[in-house]
Length: 204
Length: 226
Image (cartoon, rainbow over the protein chains, first blue to last red):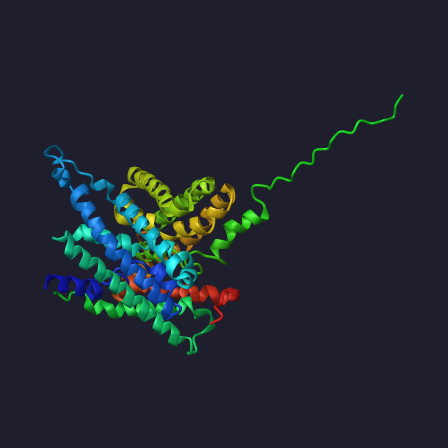
């Protein structure tokens, strides 16, 4: 039950895009067609689902004050938490590089379409944000951290697919020329963000 | 007397490119308008939304980004021929992270209260896509000096939008500019209210959208073909 709660919370109430506005850059740039949006969304789910549990292990067995006591009792008062930024970003960069190689090998068309934004998943703030939120909220087990990672990935996936669908439709409407494309996308995202504010304060 | 002249091999000096040649000036100027990182390249949106509630932190943030972007471009461009392609992201991130830690320490030493206000966002410069985007797109393929200029130009282009958005949000959200009261008391007595919506993040998106609208109606070659 706890897992369901964490999942629902991560997908809707604490949605990465609409509640925290993390990972906006690739969200805005790759949402022109639903097909590419689905591809990037899947990549983000995968990276978040893998990197959050790895960061969780790192945090609990290496970085937290006293986390190294499993090695020997003399490490009980070692606090390496000031290293968390650079450790997390290194893990994320390594996983992203892995994903890039896999996509290049098995889906070259998608690789071409994603272009510069595939390596940029490494600096997609939602990934580092996910790792930092995990650290902040102190999940009890590895399972819960994984659920949280997958949940925020799914939330991001839903957001990008939704905006891509809206953008495909809006192509047929009469938007003022200077507002076409990027401008109207910003404004729609703002409106969707206001709509998602209704989830604020829902307690699960 | 021989009239034979000794042929001296004439050394043709290669014309050295001046430091501020027109190509280099273009690198500085373009990101301010034609290829602005926020409104055209769509890079670095997250921090633009988060720190623009007030003007002061956004100016500090803009300066930090200029510094980090310029110097990371310089370092990566110097190293570009020795970085193995497979692990380039990690190398780039380590360089950027080191520079960000430097900036963070400087801010803590000299403008402590603003650094408190920015809190995690200085750390999040590491994941600011402008830095990575310019490293990937420019510094990996160009010489150090143009890359340095490109970094400064893009940092300034980012700063321009940041300051403009934060001016609008601070003015309408709390009636102040740079922390000074602008809206007079008589307004409030006459029934004027601060627009609480302007402080919330969705409004930042809408304001950036409106800026894009204004920019593209002036600069029509940026209009997307649909």
